[in-house]
Image (cartoon, rainbow, N blue to C red; front, side):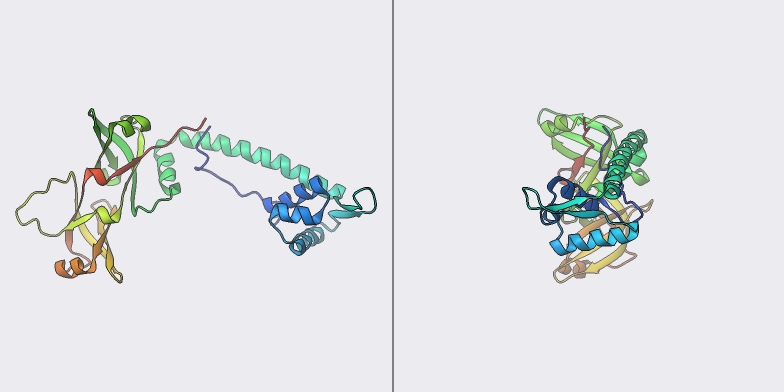
Length: 266
């Protein structure tokens, strides 16, 4: 089955009757009680009546009717019109689910697009998150080094445990997302004749310096338009006189890079 996070749809009838409304109808049909149905669908008793009355006005006929007497002392049931709406909703939900599965299957056949959508859908606290594909893997007994090429032709190097690499089933050409916390990025404006051991070094131009109470977010724009964000103390910003338009190099260790790959869903 395709990754269900890639595609979703919000089904509504007549532009107003949504899933929550039909949850209320389902619960009412099952319980025969407005009170119990309202609780099941997350409405107050008054709110349930208001939504039912509003829908009845749209339909120009009642959607529920009172039932008097009986062992339960009476209750509320759906009218034939309401049952018809509920049946239509169930049918359309089934058709929509089939359509979404079909389109998700198509999306997974578009590697670049699917990778982009996965990177957008992933929610993390890492400010630097880039989609790409694996271009090199060097496996060792303890650690594995992975190279991921991202947009602009830039290559990010990550070092992870070999056990983690096996678990992720890394392979050449496989789509991947690399994540780097802004606090792990060091900005260098002058190497002073020294060379650094960090594998990841990206030269660019400072495009934003957003000062906070204690630290600043500094954005470095790379050739090709990619952005790297670093979290820098205000003291460091002042000491380096960081400003927009200034040349700088973002440096971070391979151990600071997290790698994510899509997991197949059965």
